[in-house]
Length: 356
Image (cartoon, rainbow, N blue to C red; front, side):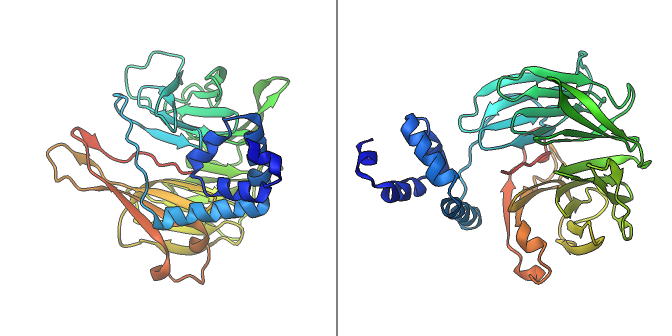
């Protein structure tokens, strides 16, 4: 700590900039002086943040990843979300669990259905800065405090018999999409989470949703639609964005789509101009799960393998978002990285991917 007394800020900053993300995080826990310095000279410094970001991108592209394997003995991970602190897994019996991302230790368990589930009831999730959002195949929507797992909201608000097929948690709202095509916006009002808006303009069954800020997209078995969440209405497309959506991810104005059992590869669409930018890996593999976060997009291969069959490797592919949306980058020059995993003894498919 005496280094801080000698006005060596630039040298200390360079030392911290050369630490690994985990070491840097641990340094913030040493004392208030270190934590304040890191926050001021790294997190709140544009040049320092740019340097850290560029190093992280280079590590993703050119370094061998560190692999942690956590096995908690529960069957059937249906969905996963993560950030720099937490992993949340949704399972197949209406439950979810939150784990520490560095240690794998269980933080808390979430009961995402208010009834005892004896049959399959898969849980999908999204992770915000203060809230964990969950939906079940039987239609229950839940919100939880991410700090301690306290239940904040739970209801079948799309209808008792209506399936819910997408949830998005942001700092301003939570968005859910129903199989009947409806979109609901929940907001924190007077200390409680409540439905703020219901939108029934779309009549096609939703297969997946994603959103960011003012804009949202919904996918159906026919097309992708763009929504203005400030006006609470569909945006009139220049022309239809015709594609069968299995799952999608959205970074305005671009939608990244996978087709599951319907078609191979990944499609990238400009939702403002309603044009397809590219269709990559079109003749390679079918993909069924996708997640985009800032610079990278992660997709998982549709690869059902049962015990006794040929043990094909299950693939997860990481691509560079900026290259995918730049039409000047030829497909053969697109960077992508393939991670392969061996199937398990019972049944193996990579059901979910998440990156931060």
